[in-house]
Amino acid sequence: MAGSETKARTVADIMSHPVVTVAAVDKMAEAASTMRERRVGSVVVVDGTLPVGILTERDLVRFTAAGADVGTAVVAEWMTESPDTVALDVDVIAAFASLSEHGYRHIPVVDGEQLVGIVSMRDLMRIAQIQPAENLAHEIPRGLEGVVVAETDIGDVRGLEGFYHYRQYNAVDLAEQRSIEDVWHLMLEGELPSRDERAAFMATVAPLREIPAEVRAALPTIVGVGPDAPPLDMLRTTLSLLGAHLGFRPSLDIDATELKAQAMRVCAIVPTLLTAIHRIQHGLEPIDPDPELAYAANYLYMLTGDVPPPVHARAVEQYLISTIDHGFNASTFTARVITSTGADLAAAIVGAIGALSGPLHGGAPSRALDMLDSIGTLDNAEPWLRAAVERGDRLMGFGHRVYKTDDPRSVMLRGVANRLGGPNVELAEQIEAKAIEVLAELKPGRKLYTNVEFYAGIVMDRCGLPREMFTPTFASSRVIGWCAHILEQAADNRLIRPSALYVGPPPPQPLPPLD
Ligand code: ACO
Image 1 (cartoon, helix red, strand yellow):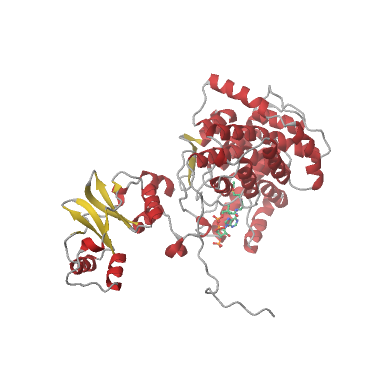
Image 2 (spheres, rainbow, N blue to C red):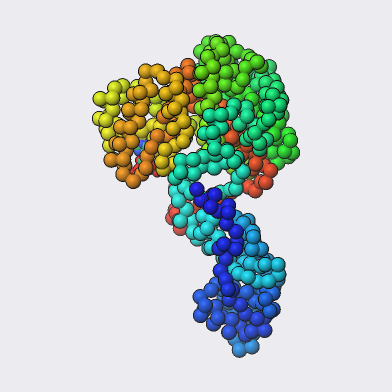
């Protein structure tokens, strides 16, 4: 992905050199003709090899507009003195930030105090794939595809390789070999726990799962307002109340320790809230968390009232680990945008849940299973799939913005589904193969393969989760990823505030008379 390339790039990799220079005592006429001949937008003014000023096209315009004497004016009178410089080893993103903050188009590069090159805004944008709205907005890909908007230590997705990672570890290895508590620790604390640290972490989070009495008392009312609404809608409302009840203050006003404590509380309580909401929707009493049970077993227990077979708890746990984080997806980006305003953690999570609930993001697994049901038999698969794609429908559980090959989560979950067995696994594999064939034929070149949601539904169904809980279950693990991103954003915050290219009628138009 562009992010990993960009991260390694420094100013030294992209600067132009040797630099076109002039001396402060040179005549403006000579400097202007140098710039014209060398086709550069600026020249660095040097004293020996020391940069003492910069002269740009804007200075030439000012100079011409002022009607100054071409024969006598010298560079020293029109240049910007003591220009800001950038060191050779500065990351391109940081250099871009410095240029855009000051409104510079060019910045000299120095090694110590010696001039060694120059970088332009255009160089940086090309490399960093950062496009300002001012005059290049039309080049921004729709849906911000491929645009690098931040640096992160949390993880990344390499779409062409079919690989993603949490921190420095392969996420699939984590899902196959570690517990969700370990990965939760990794995401929020930055490292995998030792055995002792894991035990301490589990002891810390167990009481945080419990719902405060005041919020518990409000649940029947919340659910009663929209008895048939998706559980995620209820969760949004409940988390707003929880944040208010626990006194979450704007992230701008609290320190990192307080924000992390809030993150731990929210990650721990979301599964309890979701299962309580689900049970109340079905006229059942919520079940308190069992401190003796690990995360996934406790989740299934709170949902059904039965301690699940270990094989089901482990399958759900693997699904949950595999969906904790996934680059700058829409809900994670939403959480970071809200945090960038300094708003409180509950606000960021509520916004992220809203983004996740859409069928193009997290709302697909139940629809993928509905699709399998509706296809029903292998014989029916090809005509059904063909008709759907020809109608312009999207096959749920296929396609991905970043993956242009197998989604590693889907590969892992196919394995989990096979391990669990069951009547629809074989059919699902056959339908998957047919769908990929149909998509390759009817949507050539789009590289559409199975995404995480296709086998997620099958695994969750097999483990006894009802369809309306598929997307909420996704949310219950993704909240850990959102929280990691919220903490990272708050720790080094700058308001995320992009621009748009206005394409309406040219303003200002005269106001129409009021008829
Ligand atoms: N079925 C049929 N055609 C598809 C599908 C699909 N599942 N996905 C993409 N296409 C086609 C589009 O129709 C489009 O064709 P066109 O060039 O003829 O117009 C082309 O592929 C490109 O589609 P885009 O919408 O530009 O691709 P984008 O990167 O924006 O979409 C997305 C990614 C939203 C996931 C898309 O593949 C999709 O809608 N999939 C189905 C829903 C789904 O499974 N969502 C879960 C995603 S995983 C997650 O969020 C956890």
